[in-house]
Image (cartoon, rainbow, N blue to C red):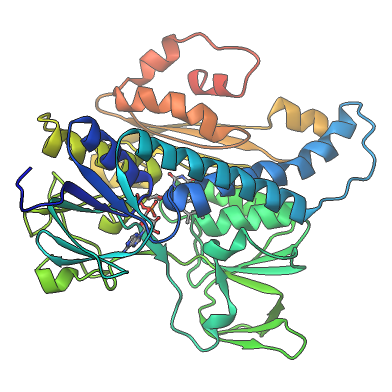
Length: 449
Ligand code: FAD
């Protein structure tokens, strides 16, 4: 390290990508520091994937307890206590935050618990005024929930606040149609709240296969979740007794106790000093980077949600690893963005990898699909009228399975293994060669004709 610098690498943001990059770069021998303005662990650990998934588990007991009666269990009327689940989830988050801090500590990464901004190609200034210099700066500041500019928006909350709700609201309105909106719709519905999902377009989960998202919509409606489509917000009014009156274009005003905005996540670049030092930003404020995560200023790199490529934790982690290996480990590595599996932890969950049927038809022309539309054995005995749907999308010319899309119990768990086959470009006849593992839901993947 040149004596002109305090660190070889200064990472801004200790989230999924930042922590991985910091610890791997330190492992390669670099002197590393990280600044974190909120809590070590970042969105995924503190207020994203992890607490969300724990709420999904908690919510699913509503159905498990009801189904258990059909399996012979005498289940007394059970009462759900939100503060118990909330506090248990929050203490698990505290525990994980501690582990992430220890990981950085063990790898000799210095942590500054404060906001940082960039003041030059190699210069950082902390919130307390401390000025530091680093050979390389990594922006790993993630993204934040978008709050639309409408009158009364300050009365709404976002996924940031949802994990801390004092009490369980009776009526929950959720603005948005993406995965976060649908996941929270499922969670609050299972907790017996009255849930309405309000979307400005007529589609939910745009990036998922049409048949699969239609199935989720049908099942959600059947369960009692309400949907308002083509309903852009006009204003939000706080009423005297504390509830909200929501005004949407073309709709009657609607009352809710809580409104959650889940309408997208914007890269966290505000006030970072990027434009001043010449870092080029995209139209939504994302840091523009090349395949090696390098920005338009050679000493400044960016990874994860702040680059707005694919906003998922495993992607941020891969990018952090690739950055550290390339810049500090002498092992040039690029992230392969092809066939990234993803899931929606709704009730039931959705999972998908590769091209949807629509994408494959546009890209490949001739495509064959294989569909299994079935009622899982457990649902049959439970008297639960929810059908699962699995779809294989196959390139007609090569017989390659180019996409797998599923909705049904445990779909994300099953899809993670099936994604290996898509990534390995296996062909439909190879799926057919595999013997079924009976009786499972996953066996449908090798039985589709
Ligand atoms: P982050 O993890 O967001 O970390 C960025 C960090 O930078 C934050 O801790 C922030 O406080 C800090 N920071 C920002 N600016 C500064 C500054 N100027 N100075 C110092 N620190 C700063 N992904 C999945 O793969 N699966 C899921 O199931 C999933 N569920 C999600 C559910 C919700 C409700 C949300 C909101 C997100 C979910 N995600 C999920 C997305 C996932 O959390 C992100 O993709 C991931 O955390 C991105 O990692 P990152 O390192 O880019 O940023």
